[in-house]
Length: 196
Image (cartoon, rainbow, N blue to C red; front, side, top):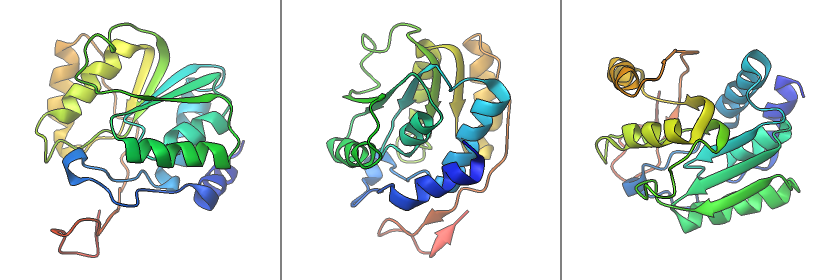
């Protein structure tokens, strides 16, 4: 599938959060970012097609849906939020995808996250601004789950910290792209229409 086709499909049908929860730092991954991220993971690194992929903190499932469209053998979307999983389920059904499974789990459950059972982990984790350090917990769990690669979106201001933690955990960290992630006015405390 070509990049424009993937982005077009994701723009057409993917539902996002009805009432995002600030405690979970829920910001939907845009179809544009999802398509570019997944297309590059697939075409440049061969880490999607035919692979067992985990979408950790899957939210509404845009990364899961896009990964399925790029022919992953199986995608497992994991999230703690019932409302997000309900939206993800609707999106998966809308696209009639049979290679996506959803699981409700808390990343703090270390027994669940204890083996390299996936080839690839993809994620747009919470930024860690409301729940300090949650982004690093996600990253650490992802490294425990992936046998090959982890692809994750993070604020550029945390880059040096992530690099330090990756070295501590015995992982190699590479910045693959710098993207503008436009956050719309989502919560009551937001003062601007949008922020990049």
